[in-house]
Figure 1 (cartoon, rainbow, N blue to C red):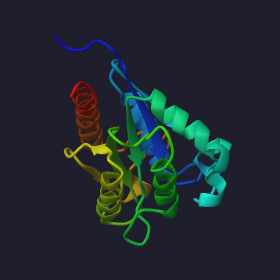
Figure 2 (tube, rainbow, N blue to C red):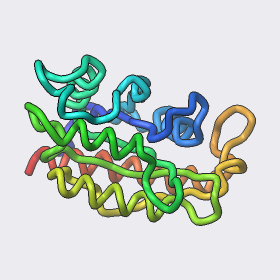
Figure 3 (cartoon, rainbow, N blue to C red):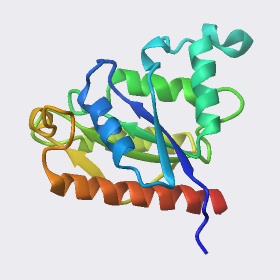
Figure 4 (cartoon, helix red, strand yellow):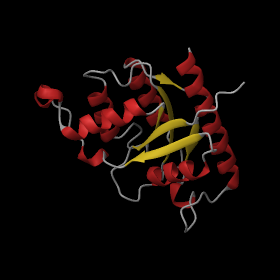
Length: 189
């Protein structure tokens, strides 16, 4: 018998731009999520300061504390990363650096899905590979398959922000279904 609970996913866009393609991808994912999967998009990444051990005293900066609390409340993370200069953006690495420290360890044992969209022609393979390596070092449980890399972001969405290609939508649906299964499997085991 399947677990009837709703899986709570915290989505984080790895770009600070208000109308970033990765924020759009998360919005599409939230809208397409099946009824037993809820995706809330974290909107305060821009308030997280650059990692600095001097700021960790007394529990760390308030934006980091709020982010950590949101992660604790979630069953899994979904990180939408762009690819900048053939790697992950600095803001994503900064996010992981903050989350890899302190109590509770919010990344250790946390199920994580990674996907991304970029304006370039090659998708986000290299950024995702770098992020997988970094999250693995923190003990996160990264969903191995399927992987979703989207290129040519300028043509990926229609004027209303929906995916322009329903074949990509079907791939996204499959990805979300597997993320739900991954979250439940890792939580149970």
